[in-house]
Length: 169
Image (tube, rainbow, N blue to C red; front, side, top):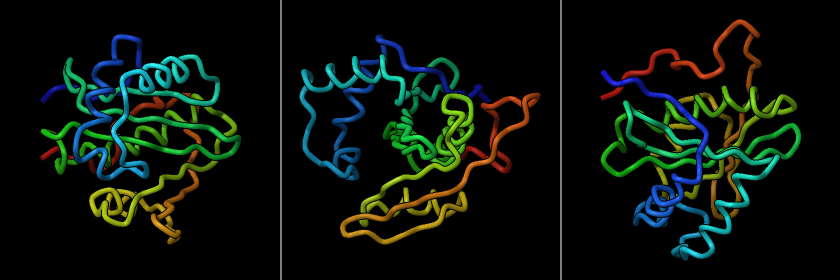
């Protein structure tokens, strides 16, 4: 089995992220379903690479990217956004990625005590993932708001670790 891990996004990831953000299912399951232009994507990506409050990560299996995750800090809370490549959806990568993002939130944003995600009503797969990870839920106008307090890892533990009970299908 290939090693699966998170790494920080770098400039060379711009094309992978652009392709993924405009993939049909990603657009359909996004709060903003409009296609993203290359120009606006590149401006956004440049901003996120230099932001103190946002971090972009790439989920790697072996040596290939299989997904992306993002954290946006607002003091004590971090917003989680993520997506998985079409060939790996439904196999457990989303659950794994969200749990890893909770771990790195502790490392990258020490003031963060909770994480949240916003999921449109039609995105049943993401709803199941957040619920399966013990997130609380609130119904909002057009989406569900999932939130959970995150635990600080001890200094001698790895912050990016394999979540308990994770099995790839």
